[in-house]
Amino acid sequence: MNIAVFSVTENGRQLSLRVRELLGGEHKVSRYCFHKHTDDDSAVFWNMGSMVGRLFERSDAFIFVCACGIAVRAIAPYLGTKADDPAVIVMDDSGKYVIPVLSGHIGGANRLAEILSEGLGSTAVITTATDSGGRFSPDSFAAANDLIITDFKAAKEIAAEVLDDEKIGFSSAYQHSGLPSELTEFGVCRTGICVGTNIDEKPFPVTLNLVPRNIVLGIGCKKGISADAINSAVNDVLKKNNIDINRISEVATIDIKKDEEGLCDFCSRFGFKMSTYSAEELMKVTGDFDSSDFVLETTGADNVCERSAVLCSGGKLIVKKFAADGVTVAVAEKTVYLDFERKMQL
Image (cartoon, rainbow, N blue to C red; front, side):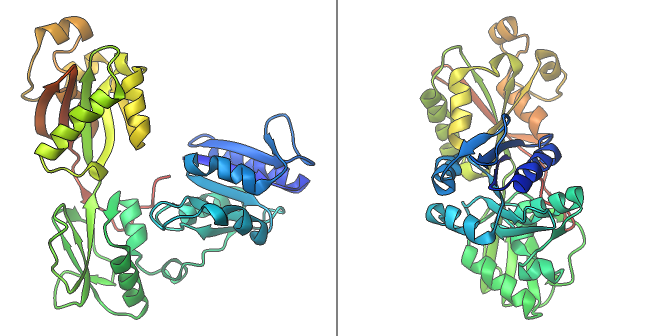
């Protein structure tokens, strides 16, 4: 995650250092201090709202060490939808409380607050009703299992039914751990969750369809290829195989392409993580792959796209190599196992 930490007082500045120390190992943490209380290792701001605006599109989370009112006024002009807004957390400058105020489930603010409270010895003040009552949350379940929420209205209605002690139906195309008490696979339920790739499947009068984000693209490309050329090839593959681009979890390729500008730009454009592997690692992958002597001679592996997709996914190849204008694309699918105890990975 890209995390921006704002502070306005001297105590807040010192606390922001502790926050970065705690989170910096796993995330990119940038500190922004009010000009009266800053240091050489932070950026300086005079107007918090203006600085937030500059950072908003490229930040996954904001942590404000200040009063809630200051934080709310700074972030409010830039907010969009529940699906897109970053996690927002407020801490008092004495470090006693950590309060997620926005995007608690999907954005991970609640989970981030728990991590901060454990590391700082603070109290996490979780106000979302399902979390504070220890109840099942469709948003949290989806976020923890990398599932796409297709209908936020249905998700909200199911969360309300949980709080009203109504049973929620559950249907899944995938294996899963034991269901929480709020869910059932039996009987007739008005509301329910359906996990699978067919969003037209509606087993309940009010159905929340959750779609797994478990597609890995294996990509090979010639040197100097453009992001547009890669995008065109990928779109052709997705369209021909009826795969939603939102289901893509990451892109895989050979390590000699890790700095290929067009490929890096393509991944950045869509926010895809890129995983790279050595030729030796790729050649150890077992399976029925297309083989090219030319690719073997130039890269050390006889096939980049198929082998990297399978290696990265740990699953199975569902679309074999497609080649177009210097780009090769293959598609693999990760195995899905739904865990109701899993915590969101930040």
